[in-house]
Amino acid sequence: ILGLIATVVAINVQDAASGAEVQKAQLDIKNLESALDMYRLKKGRYPSTSEGLQVLYTSNTLKGSLAKDPWGNDYVYLYPGQKNPKGFDLISYGPDGNPGGGDDITNSDN
Image: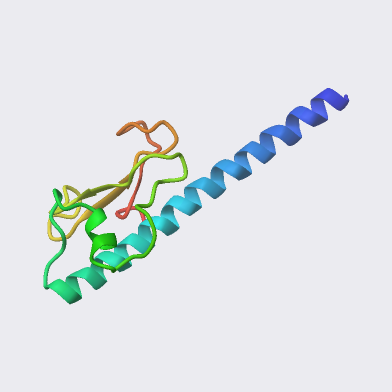
């Protein structure tokens, strides 16, 4: 009985942690969206895909080091976006770190 209870608790804790990681990625994407909008206000344009998110840090739009998603992978930035052709796409490939698979988190989801 104790083993069964421990298994149920472990599963619930793991699900809660997984949910927190997804929420963190969604919040990071919202923060990056705001920083990209601020960059556009300062420079009159969004950074190109080749300039990437690192330009937000070198232009002092964001402080610190280049953000990683909760799974330790780089956020993907595309301008113009594929899902947002008049804007940009921000993507975390989720826990598996690979495109697709149903676990990607994007600014289109927010």
